[in-house]
Amino acid sequence: MKNPTKALGGVAAIAAIALALTGCASDDATADAPTSAAAGELTTLVVGASPTPHAEILEFVQANLATDAGLELDITTFDDYVLPNTALAEGELDANYFQHLPYFESQVAAQGYEFDHFEGVHIEPYALYSDKITDLADIPDGATFGITNDPGNQARALDLLVSNDLLTLNDTGDELATLLDIKTNPKNFEFIETAPEQLVRALPDVDLAIINGNYALEAGLNPAKDSLLIESGEDNPYANFLAFRSEDKDSEALATLDDLLHSPEVKAFIEQRWPDGEVLAAF
Image (cartoon, rainbow, N blue to C red):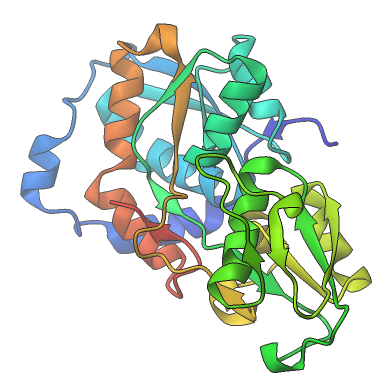
């Protein structure tokens, strides 16, 4: 597991897109933005994020929107899905931006975190990849699938296979489905669980792998172009959001950051930075 590092990646791309976006925002959007703070009165927020696309989006906000809104963002990147919530709970971060609601709820229930969250900012469509197979019809009996071992995303991966008629699941009610809930597996697929951040590296060793969007992007995989199956963005419940400690629910600085993340400028940045739909704005 890598130690968190300051986010540096994506700066050049952000700068180029920022130039392209200059003047794109409407006058009304500018008028609705938080008022500019006097020099020297910036509020610093320490925000943990996955490197791609979360930190890139935050870097765009820092470079183009934060100062006028009275904020200074101190962005720390994490390469896994455990440490950002641990760091938030321990007060090392003011907020984190990496997770969707099912994962958030599973972690709050399992760890007893006293967290809250804002509305979703973006969706990274989950997708199925293979180095060996180019067509779904060619998936052999007994094929091996790499699948995440975290509950919030394992259910999501299974849903992708169910929605494409590759499996069926038992009814789990309000509980997240796991591999133990597979009802029918007509082609006797074998599932190999691993940490989500390891799935890209595991891809050569399995027939297929269902990989989180951020890890696919970091590895140079385009979910919209390189996958055999991809999640639909319509009515997708897996939008990623800004999470924070419940004790900070009245923080004006956090509310301001969330407003910036839902601004027309950020939506335009997402659409231009990821034009193939590999990242989708959720607002």
